[in-house]
Length: 219
Image (cartoon, rainbow, N blue to C red):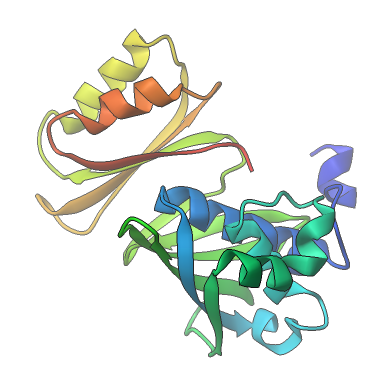
């Protein structure tokens, strides 16, 4: 643990968990959408649901979806900025069973037809954990440059991806695979020591069995 884990991030307040963490959750959802977001349905659970207006959680989530970092002064004006962009959103207040107290479920739609549903929680100090992606249970933080790859659970898919990444000179720090059932939907989460470039991500998308591949840059 370092001093920044204790005092939290440089941010627009008032709360690292309810404001900075919320902005990171929104930003993660937008990057996983890989499209220009035009509409969002956001379910707030637990303490997010009870204190979201006072702590600016709602504004921070919208700011994150609009790709604002946690220290962006425009966070306080995110509603007005969203309106000018024609970005539509609604908040739903509903306790999600067995969820972390600071949880948001975001369903995003993109300009070009993209869509993503992501559930994540703010765990303190501005850190987050993504717990569900398009209905599939996952677990990652976005604290490192992270490849999030949806694919078919089939022999050779993981090996092909890891071989390609190695051939590109990108070092894998951690790799996790989450799947619904054998032979069904799966998600590969690969944290890397440095971010692969856009051409590398496009090469991954062309591999057999890959449905989507998105780069979640360090939040």
